[in-house]
Image (cartoon, rainbow, N blue to C red; front, side, top):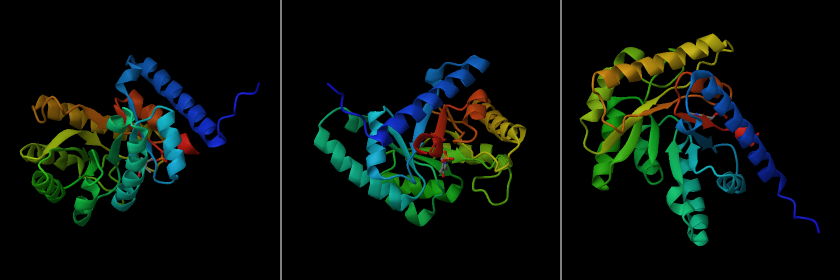
Length: 246
Ligand SMILES: *Cc1c(COP(=O)(O)O)cnc(C)c1O
């Protein structure tokens, strides 16, 4: 009369997820937001396919990768599995390209990505739009802003974001859905908070200037070490790897 035990990795992911959800919900409560306004992207770059399947079983359908080649590979492998299941899940799974993207990798990224979080230049946005147009589709993209102003980080400069966003909105085959940033490497939570506040301020400024339509609605900020702060400062998408799979 023993129930068959869940595999331990599935157990661990489910447990981690419930802790993360609780922390998100606590952070939301502190600032009067609804927990439903925060979406989790499971960043799968350092785990294997069985772990990704467990992630889907735990109810996470937004998956993120940081390199175009791995994104394309994983997409292919998982698509096959989802096909065999013949259920609604196939239509729900969304792949997010969260890492730095070079123009010569756009084609590959577009074979798999539903959303690209890491657009940080006009030329990159143009390349995505041109490729998307050739495929007769419109791709959701986010503008990555270097809010911590650290030299080694990707993302456009804070002062360039609004103008860049405006230019992107004039392109035919991309849709600007929000802004993305990476928190600083700093251990100082207040420095992290300032970077997230800055992203929100740029977002609000753009909204005020009527840049981006109704679809311009997201702040992608917060990773394993700083998602609670990000949620307090308005994140609608958190990108989590280690805290989920570790
Ligand atoms: C790896 C990665 C994440 C997730 O990082 P964790 O610290 O493992 O949660 C989020 N965003 C980007 C862009 C990443 O490359």
